[in-house]
Length: 247
Image (cartoon, rainbow, N blue to C red):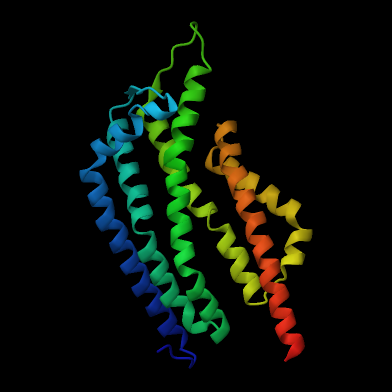
């Protein structure tokens, strides 16, 4: 049972500290697990994908610490991705006491969708976005250009793309949540859709700054998800307005 009585500032700070410690602990635990399996993860990310006609790639390192840094990157980002449900739980436990009853109800209603969409976004990056982008850019070269792909550049690309896709796939949940609690109407969002599309493109460019194909591959499904969530938000908004009108 959540307590609606306001807490002193020091209690809020202590609660935040506790939630941060728990969150970091989960990330640390899963990062250690990813470190143990880092060689297998690299082998998986660089292996062939027969269904998409993508061959295995050979990675190189040009710095003494580069291979270690790549494994460290896999461990940290992998730990964050796997720990995401636990991170969301602790965010919930911190912010829920400050929410109204209808906001809490909506939050819990969309929580499973939030976790599933994050997983779907991360999975979509791993397959097929990363293999397709890999094949496209390697095949883009010709006989005068031999690709030498460093382990750090490829692992940074793969891990940040996976995490970024998981985050941007949360957009539909954000749309449904803010419209369901009446913070903004879906029609207002529809009027500003060009700005939302631009924001999606900017976010996609930040995730894949040197990769136009991956940027479009990220942006297109997110735009479709946004438009789909806007469509359902309008239906739900209309039903809500009818209920209010007949009350």
